[in-house]
Structure formats: C-alpha cells, structure tokens
Length: 255
Image (cartoon, rainbow, N blue to C red; front, side, top):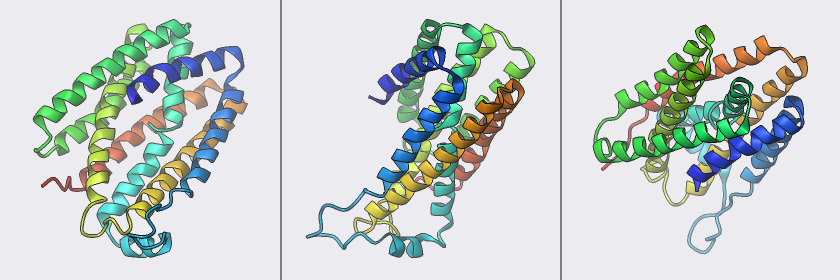
C-alpha cells in the first residue's frame, strides 16, 4: 500500500501544481498536515477493561529522561519536516520543473520505488539480526551527496540520480528507525500499559515537524524566489544526516 501511494501521490501532486500554482499547493498540504496533527490526539486506548486509562502526562514523565526515546522522537520531528513532509514535495517540484511532464515524474518515481523495495528485501535478509549502524550512516549521507551534485551539475541524469538515491536510502532510513520505534514500544520502559500514549506522542511530534516544514515552504512560495526554494531543498536534505546520527544512538532491541 505504501509503495502504491509513493507512486500515485507525486503524480497527483504534480498535476495539482501544474493546474494551479506552488503557493496554493503548499497551502493545501499545510491544511492536511494540521488535520493530521489534530487527529493525533484521538489515538485512544479502546481496551479500557484491560489497560489503564489514557494518560499522556504520566507517560511523558516516565520517558522524559530516557535519552534513546528522546533521540527517537527528535528524529521523528525531523522526519516530519523532511522525508514525511515538505522535502518530499520539494523533490516532486524539482522533478517537474526539470523534466517538465507528470509522465516522467511517474516513471522516475516508479523506478525509484521498485529499487527501494529491492533494497528493503536485501536488508531484511542480511541485516535483520545484525548491527546496522553503518547502513544508517550510509543511508543518511548518500541523499545529501546526490543533492550537492545537482547544485553543481543540473541535468536530467543528475535529477534522476538524486531521486533514486533519495527514495532508496530514505526508505531504508525509515525502516531502521521504525524497527527501533516498534521494538522500543515493547521494552521495559514502554509496555502495553502506555503504548498508546507513546505512539500518540510520536504522531504529535511527527506532525508538528510536518506543519513547521510546510509553513516554511508556504512562506517561501509567496516570494517566488527560486534561490530560496533551492536553499530550502538543500537544507532539508542535509537534515537527513542528523536523522541518521540520532537513529544510530538508539539500540535495535532485537532479541
């Protein structure tokens, strides 16, 4: 389902941009992100007969001094600003501006998604039970290298290379972060009594980052300044390295 969305949504986004304008598109996405944040507060425990009542303040007090959880939640905040948020849309805009048609966008996105699926299969076979810190570091650095390449040499080949590197390695970074997220949700500090609160905090953190990223994107869109737009793309891509460093600090909790 996620792979299908990753193929369809960029094409839909590209169509909206081409039919309207960048500013209106940013405003629409910002509105959707605010709705997502509001919905985060409705993640409640429906098994009241078995588990304690929903108490997010208690969970915050419980985890506030845990460095691994703080690193993981900070990584989620940056994910919201970048790969789960405005950076994904900026990448789409870059491809549309460079390659002109939504068809090219669909082909490139489909190719990158297929390669990312293959990469995940390889990871699951080789690194499922192994230390993956070097993979995390590699996955956070390669998208940054590829974005610097397009700032020095911008042509269809480097745009395609950036999209493939970005899609494949951020997908791998998402996977390694999610492994830690779900394993830490079933650890000594997070258990069935406060899992709902923990995932609510994750959604709130992620969506705050997403809203912040789209607010910046919207403000830049009002200037119609391509330099600012490209600078935002560069800065958000560089932040992926910080995500990698934060995720590396969290144990996999694999048995």
